[in-house]
Image 1 (tube, chains in turn purple, blue):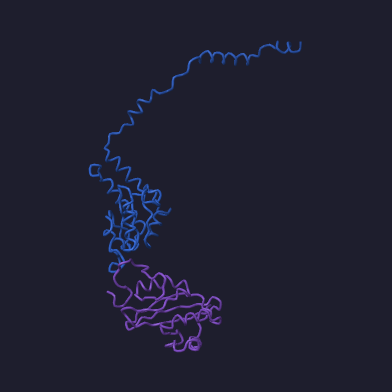
Image 2 (cartoon, one colour; image 1 turned 30 degrees about the vertical axis):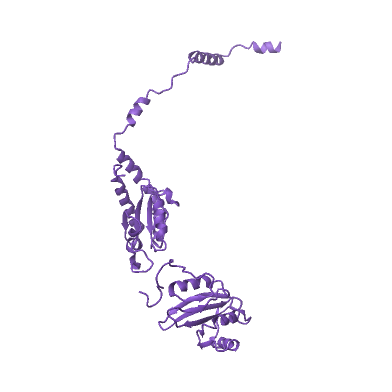
Length: 146
Length: 196
């Protein structure tokens, strides 16, 4: 069984590596600033003790005040997992750095989130609609979509 | 001397009788017997049926429908069940589900049709040769079903292609699909070459 890491302890390590990145950390997830997301993700992947080499899932939630992008990370080496979150408040053009260069599985997931939520992933190699067609107006999974 | 002694063996009665039979048959078989073709004329006269082209054509068409292998969602499993041995679609002359639209004349649209899939369905329908028929199977293909208000689902395939028979259900039982197919048969039987 995959062990869920204690997020407070991991958050302390993240703060040591890149100060000011963590907004909040409770028992379930770590929330980081979107500007320092890529640094944190790189740290989580490349630190040997953590070694998160597999992005199991990538999704987004619309809380009306802000969007939350959720990264479910798994380490196949150490058999442990972690939930990483980031937020963006701009509704017109929400933007989050892309993690495709770290995990290839983020490619289609980020395209799906862009398609249905309208969150732009900076640095994505091929950011276009995945499930809907070109020319579709709006992003249907947003809570204010009618 | 020995050889002559053997050749001088007196004639056996059985051998003599056999020799007689063979030589008499040979004498009687100098000409070939004519082929027994006197029945031919009678048989041809029995084969002429008085009927109409419409009747024969519709009879042949309705009993040799080739459906197109076409599953979009969960209804496809009921369609596969209909084709398998328990419900046995072969009883209606629909032997094999065709993989190519060019060999098919019945399209069973089984499942939810999304707008992204719609151009492919229209293309496949247009690739089928005339005459062709369409069954809309299940609520989703009839009217969009529970996804009617959705942003991505076609509200009824009759927006895309003309539909001959609607088979309701979510999903319809194989019996319902077979009933729909017999309805298609009734529809074909009423067709005429005058219209086509």
